[in-house]
Amino acid sequence: MNYQERVNERGDKIYLYYDNGREAGQRKSTGYFLYTNPRTDLEKNHNVEMQRIIDVQKAQVILDQQAIGTGYIPNHRVKRNFLEYYEQFVSENKRVARRHLECCFSRFKKFIKRDVISPLDITHALCQRFRQHLLDTLTGETPQNYFATFKRMMENATQEGYFKVCPTDKLPAIRNPSVKLKSILEVEDYLALLKVPPPAHLTETIEAFIFCLYTGLRYCDIAPLRFSDFNGTHLTTRLLQAKTKQPVILHLHPIAAAILRKRRRFLGITPTPGKLLFQLSCLEACNKVIKAWCRQALGSDKEVTWSCCRLSYSVLLKDAQADDATIAYLLGHTTTNQVQRTYKRHRPKDAMGQVIKLPAPKQLPHHLSDPDELAFEECDPAASGQAVPPGPADEAAGPEIASPEIDDDGWIEL
Image (cartoon, rainbow, N blue to C red; front, top):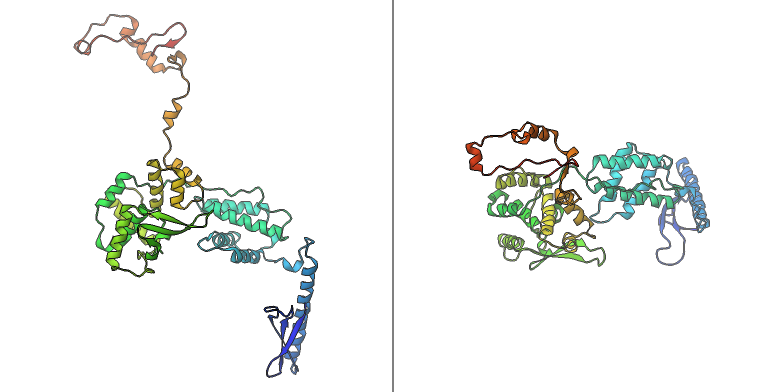
């Protein structure tokens, strides 16, 4: 590596620039400078230390050039604090509206409870404990998504020479489905909510909630929604399809279209395209409003939150015989697996109706019958052969029904 020297206008300092060629951008400033005529001890020490830094940097560049194609990672390329590498990986690979990388990094720092950790301390056992920590503190698909990004970072670090074998090998990212099922708003609940007019001071929040019931949007989707996202009765969402990279276009239900028209009338004939459709407060405050209003409107103790909109939208479409591919498209999923898994979890099939299909004899074996029923039959005078005079109730009931008999093989005729 070569350096180019330039003296400033006053002539007391020499600034150093990289000299990588004569093309544009090949002579960038290094940020280093030397004193032209050092007079004090401080200026002399500055020149000596700066010359050492320049020599070290030259040596590192030479090592980098000689290591190309050999698979060897120079020692100066390996960060002693693995958190610094993790932070750099997050900053270089983060994506808009995808916070898995940043959130997993924050969780990892809280898990290790220290500011410095060596790559030697990142072992298979540590990664396994971190995965269990995610499963213990998070639910649903969040721990799976977080650990998947952690695995990707570890594989990248292995390729760069931090590990000989990736510590997260044979540690799959798994889900942690919550034990408690979310509430689903059924068809009658939809109709009941539409019949109850919302209070004037809560109209905007409740109409946004009903809009989500008929579009399947999340709170994070409806909060930044603007009038410019609509084209007539079509909504162009910010969700992109994986294959075509095109946004998902939703056809608005008449109820959702009516809410959209009402908002336009309320805000003016031609509202500004960049204006928000709904002015909502934070999610926690909105959930409190929705819980109280739904409890009063439905007259039930259902724990209704904003997340119930998307779930109810998916389940009711599936109940209406909509195909999985269409539902997945409307929800912005890349596959139909999530639709099938959600429906199976909240709408399990009739288990008894399937179990009863197993083979069974027409007559129940004697050794499987209830002993109490047999004892009752032995104490019954009719079963012992004694004559029992008919009573008024027997005459009204009609002819006597014979009790079940046990054949020679020990079977009871049903």
